[in-house]
Structures are given as C-alpha cells and as structure tokens.
Amino acid sequence: MNTHQDLHIQLATTPDEIIDHFALRKTIFIEEQGVSETLEMDGLDDQATLILAKMNHKPIGCARYRLLDNYVKVERVGVLKDYRGQGIGQAIMAFIEQEIASSSPVLTIKLHAQDHAISFYHHLGYQDVGEPFYEAGILHQAMIKHIEKAT
Image (tube, rainbow, N blue to C red):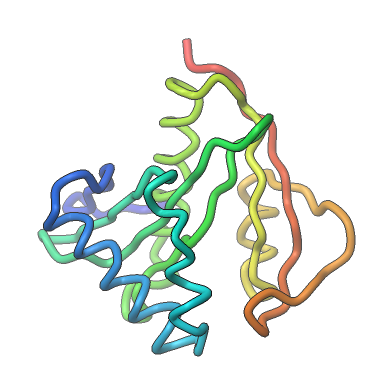
C-alpha cells in the first residue's frame, strides 16, 4: 500500500493540471511504450474525467475515465517509470473507484489492462472478460469490477 504522505491525487481541471496530465500520457504511452500519438490522443478526453497524481507537487501519474451507456471505462492509467512499484497506481485506482462510487449513476467499471498489468488489476478485484486482444500493438485483457455506492 502507498505510504507516501506527499502523494496527492486529484481531478485535473485547471489548464495547468490538464497540460500536466497530457504530458504524462505523452511520456508514458507515446515515448516509452511506442503508442502512436493518433491513438493516444483519441479525441475522447472532452468526454472524460481526467486524473492527476502528484508527489511533492511533481506530476507522476495519470488516468481518465468515461461514463458510457451502462458502465464506466477506466483508461490511460500510468505512472512514471521512477515511481512504479510504490503503490501509486493502486492509489490512483482507489481514488477513481471512490469518485465513481460517490458520483456515478453506474457502478460497473470496465478497463483494458495491458498484459503486464493484469495481475495488478486482479489484486484490486478486477475479473477477466473474454480473450486477450491487441490494442495499439500491445496485448490487453478486458476486465470488469462491480463496486458499491458510497454511503
């Protein structure tokens, strides 16, 4: 579990926060993983809630989620290489689940986990759905989790 007292996870709403969010996605997904900019910047961000994680005021992690017909789709979950393995991804997912539980009309979360992250999501209670598939040239697994409404 994350023990960082200086970790802050928030919605990215101001222009500077949104710029930081996109800069992280460029570093993590486009530069590091080789995802094409066209696929990464898919034009759906205006329909999404953007998440930004900072440590000591430095942007280090991101995610987004979108409310679709009968589920919430979590996407673009990433943490800078130097900060991985410290519970930050888990903290981002906990923040997202809390946001959804307290504000979303639907409580089913779906995501497409990259192959290397499947066990991470299993640990968080997500279940595999269907067969693995390739997305942006990277092996993925569709996953689902039902959460409870916040009281």
